[in-house]
Image (tube, rainbow, N blue to C red; front, side):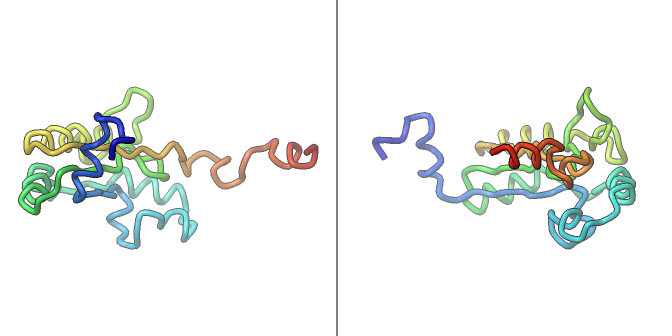
Length: 148
């Protein structure tokens, strides 16, 4: 434990935490990889994601339950490989704030978990299934491999 910097020691000492892997894919009910694994139609998925509106979402309740269970931290998926953002963004309207929920779930999560004294983490996937290269790879990949 001496080799771990002081500012990181809280994590291995915490032992018990929560990872909330959640977004529009939850409405489909077959896991967060459903768009990729089942090669769903991207346009249909985007349309459904923009209509997704989890009315019973209550980060304050999540935080209370986590604290009561003895958890010390929680991590939220802020954006998964589908590219849908759970916060307000000036860069895209493919977000929970701009679409049906009209809510910034990341802000709500942070405020709720901090209010309960829990540490927070944010998971962000840089991959985006809406970008053709996600499926096809880099255009120059084959040329680069051939030259190697």
